[in-house]
Amino acid sequence: MPPLHFESQPRPTRVLTGQNPGQQQVSQPISVAWTHSKAVRGARSKQVLIAGFPAGSFAANCYVLASGPGAECLIIDPGQDAEQGINDIIERYRLRPVAVLATHGHLDHIWSVAPVCDARGIPAYIHPADRALLSDPARGFGLGPAQQLFGGMTFTEPDDVLELTDGMMLELAGIELVVNHAPGHTPGSVTFRLAGEDVAGQPGLTPDGPAGGEAGTLFTGDLLFAGSIGRTDLPGGDYETILTSLARVCLPLSDETLVLSGHGPQTTIGAERASNPFLSGLAPATGRTTGL
Ligand SMILES: [Zn+2]
Ligand SMILES: [Zn+2]
Image (tube, rainbow, N blue to C red; front, side, top):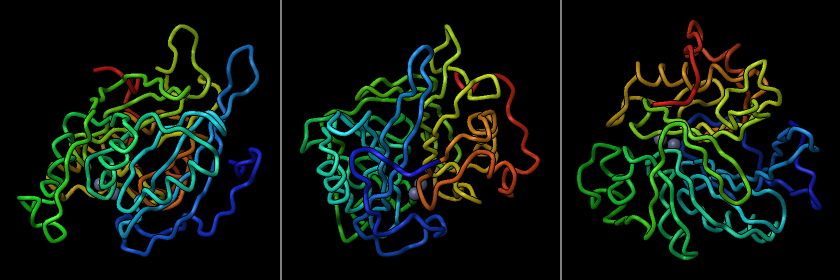
């Protein structure tokens, strides 16, 4: 996937390198950018601007998506101390945030959801099975009351919370994202997929298989990383369930599908299919990646 070339090439001061998922490290304000090309039938290719950076001491990747500079944008997983990085991207590309999306409810991904949403009057989208973690993230670590986290820090839901369902198509900021429920790391984990070329009559609801045309881009949260998968030892986690989610949501996608995960560097479905030890022997689930 080539680097971003809109009117100005961002200057990454730090590349998303191969830190292990969950590994603690100091985050610096950075911007790493990708483009996502969507082939539109009868029209020239449409691109989506994607910028991201690892936020906070957990280095959870936060992504900003827009149809281009000067447009509305979406923010995926605004984690610890993410606001400065988000503001840098917004100012650089003159973007207007319209919604926050959470891949799941773990604190390293939702830390800044409420301040980002409420400062701008925009909604947060999260799966209902992880919604309670917005206001009580300690339960995601089995710690009990939130007061046990970070010296009594408290967290609240933003004013406007909207719930995600499996197979739904989000149409926000001029961008279409397919939502898939992918439990296992947490009960409410989801993926967001920028679809490639749609199959006629079934917009956005067809996996990017060989007949699907252009490869898509998949935001996997803590479901799938380069060379690894999400941990399943935290409350609500389940190893067999995450394998089922990987088989159902990830493996039917084409090898070229770009994977932008919740920690660490970008990868592709093909690279993970070939070398990720957790995926070996795992056959794609039959049927669509959508549905009930
Ligand atoms: Zn997580
Ligand atoms: Zn995480």
